[in-house]
Length: 296
Image (cartoon, rainbow, N blue to C red; front, side, top):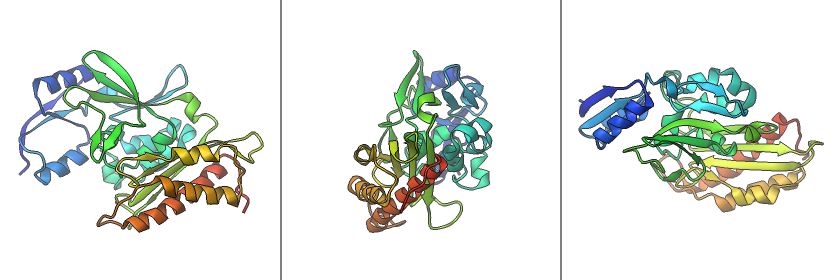
């Protein structure tokens, strides 16, 4: 039996925030794929669940007047994968969304839950980091905006006061997705329904002649206690030509920045090797998507 004390269904963000304040320790649920596992494992007791499944403010993908793409935190991964706006402008995110769990999970699991549960293996986070995504957080005083970078503060921990705040929208700024191509690669021991042993996303903006790197972002999951941007490596590769020497610098750079650990899923040494291999593969794919070619 699940130890559930009370469940409440709400139809607006303001209702949800009010119930959080009235019920200390209450949990926001939408798809509930993470919460139900913790309930089953008896990690949550006397749970008060606030369902936001029917809150329209949290659903859907839209293009704002300034060109930013807004994704409601309650949008499911299948909805993201199927969305034409995402497929056209941020195809790497559509691909990452399709790597989450099984088809059944993707129909109910949401991108907001994937971000807010703080899992270091979250499939959506590396790609969102590569697009410098922003988070709109709602509380009783209105909405404030935070960068996704730095939102994860430790394993299972995020910079969200869950007693009075709610992630409402994920924003991909127009100047972060235009003229930028990205790739996400996930390694797992199985081909399906696998939590990532390591995930890597790389996005690039190439020079006009498609021969060098104007900008690059490299992000990884399960490579450190929190999702990681390899910022020193990124800086070192600005202006670099698309050659095997640049590939070598990329591999060496990420190796100096990741901090994986041993676990029952994989050893630290294996994850170090994956960091090099996946970053190279994702870089090559991103370059090709941008119309360039790495000359070996």
